[in-house]
Image (cartoon, rainbow, N blue to C red; front, top):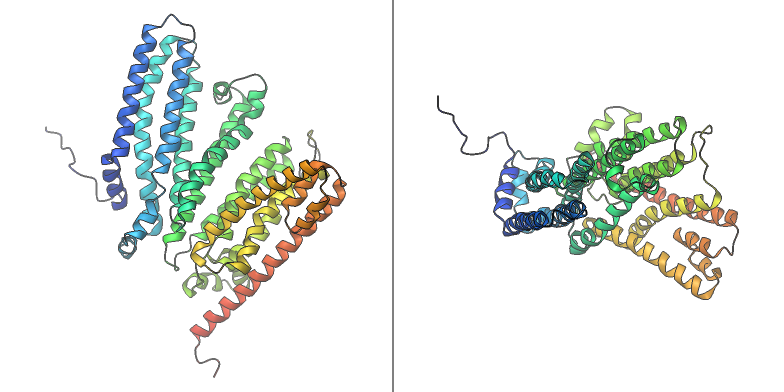
Length: 482
């Protein structure tokens, strides 16, 4: 009986996925990357086979495989997504997609899975080389295969980040931020996750081999972190191209809320290092706060209607989950408070130390730095569709300011002038370096600074929500004022 081979993709497959896969696999960038990687690995293995007597041949092969595979899937492949959504907007084809039955989420997901599919093809072609490397000896087979898998999963998350950011109109945000920020952020996350294991004398392959409890926890935390980050960024990208009637914010904020409550419960009843709790909280909080503070979709009646059906409690709940900027401010302030509770309410019976005043000053300074750009946006910027670009530039500028202030205080051997920057939470972090002031004074100062910032954001949020509600009520009942 003849076997029927399908000549094309099934109709059940997303049209965006089919289009992007066909274009991506034919792209010169992918073809050059694919062929170049295969040629290089083949030549490398032949060279290693000629010098198989060397005791370092196996480790050299592994290191080279991981290096070039990392460049391919952690840098080149994710960067192919920096124009994924902006290109559709520029070519004015996004409106045609939205007019079909394709939702914004399916459009974003299709573009993401197309690039991930190409990365999966590179991943599949690497495995035979890694298995051949086994015969050179000295290989932690499971550890290296697991590390290769983690590289691929990380590539999926980084691709989600670039595609999510590609909805921004700012070329700087779409281009420079992924190129400069992603490698640094990825390296910091990996070091924070696996540093303790590696610090105990083991190497990275042992740290990801799942052979110990610490290894399993580290790998699990890392996978959950990049999954949450990737999902948040894809949701952000969908929000940027979606009609105002689609509420992509609800699921994103609910997931963040559930994860933070879980972190709070784990801190109360668990017995582990507070540094690990800090990692949990910041990994959950940073994407949630950034995406909340950059919302710019106007509030429409079809979005608030399901909340109003729940009565007064539903109306209040809607204020935290509307996909508009005032709601994002309100949610951001409340989520910051919940994050601090997750750090403060640690298990009293834990055998590990608790935060001191200096550490709390740094923590509150960092959370204040996340809220600070939103205050500037509230008064200085009116470009609704530029909120993401403005926020990230102000956030990066805040940390550059921290570096400048720290360098100046070191050069002058005095930090007294830093009180002139007391309106910025990171100024108190810079003051800690010199030690000219007591920790309790700096802690009090950063608390007051954060409270003032949160108060301003709450005022703007409530004023904006009340104004939007009144406008929608007036539009729904045009004769009520007469």
